[in-house]
Image 1 (cartoon, rainbow, N blue to C red):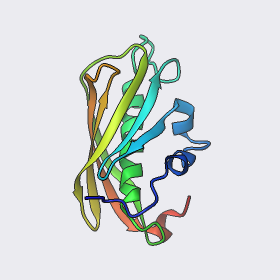
Image 2 (cartoon, helix red, strand yellow):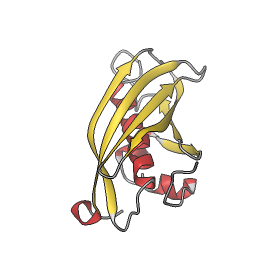
Image 3 (cartoon, rainbow, N blue to C red):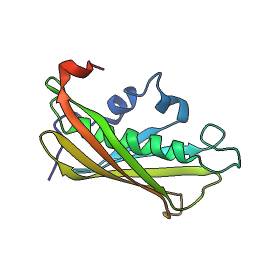
Image 4 (cartoon, one colour):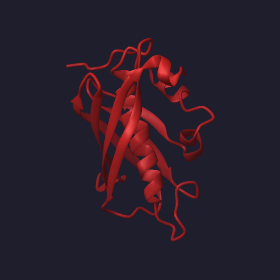
Length: 146
């Protein structure tokens, strides 16, 4: 069952990232299903830590980007916004180069909170990071507009 209340055009969704951290890290939303959102991030100088591995903070940035974008798509943007309350991540495999792909799926979509699971995998489909993001649903007037 399709959960989105907004247009899921990829050009529109990626336009939200102009002049933001997501643009700087090369994060792109690449696919949308009925109840999931997927995106990629390069593993390169922008996302490395000093040892040449994918920085855990970059993985968290990808996870929060996908989960918060997905959460926003489930809301009527004229009335509500989704803002992050909590995120956790377990980094289970190092990545030196290439591209990682994250997929956000809802665990709970409620009136005042949402919980999303984001799996980040390497190019071989091996789990790199598993994250859970909790979002608060607030009135649109509290946050502003895009």
